[in-house]
Length: 334
Image 1 (cartoon, rainbow, N blue to C red):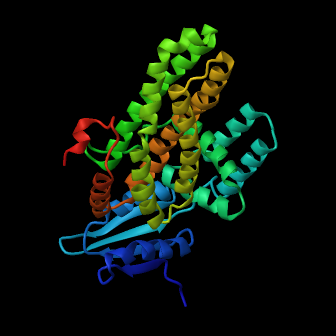
Image 2 (image 1 turned 45 degrees about the horizontal axis):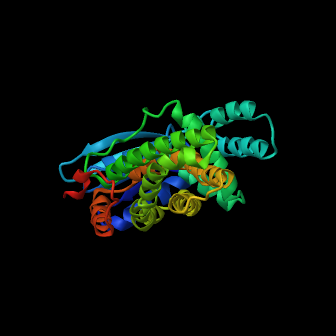
Image 3 (image 1 turned 90 degrees about the horizontal axis):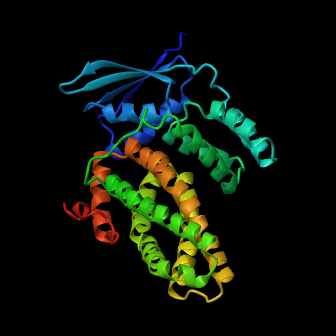
């Protein structure tokens, strides 16, 4: 008996919420060289985008019928030469990082291992590594090196949402926050070079303004944690949101400390400077990286995964939670 190389799946009789899981259940069970043929009642173009994000260079897409009533698409699983054991290579690289090897040499090796990994695929890889025993601290190191790799080719596969889109709003808020981080970094440098508490008092008000707005970003975090992250988890992307939430916890502590310093600055210059450095330098460094990861990994995974009806629901929930005092005005419209 000859085994067919085509696995057929008719989606027309399925509920919309069942289709996604069924497609990928069948796809993940296919061997290289076999084909998944789906029949649908509309053009599955969003599915193609998701395959491009989650399974780059591992499939061939061919329309067999394009409407007007039914669409038939064949998706062939192809081998990915040189990338078969990529997960093992990545794990080995980060074992070397963890053991304290030559950072520059290891990063070059990591760039090769992570080459071609997109944001959604990276999210899936993180989940696999967590399940296999890698700690979230180690995953955070993985993310940081991945950011350096991505920074070289950020524009190749990036989706830019339209004005008024929930992710566009969050990215615009990020731009404002980055502006505050730039000001904070300059004030810290000035405080280090001044030498006395009296010499920096004139900048305490500026520092307080920055700290206030960083604390006021809570609505931004709330929209992520209560709306965006749960939707990612609904689609099986669970570990990246968990890592972001852990980072939120630590950033909240540091922002609170920074705000308290501005409200009750100590008379002792060394004590003031140490508090400013401990809170401020951490915020400048880690919040900037956090924003980069969200803009270029987490948000991109959401943009490539969520459906139009998901975004309509997300917009309503975001509007209900509300926005930051510094959110661009036009985002409050709609």
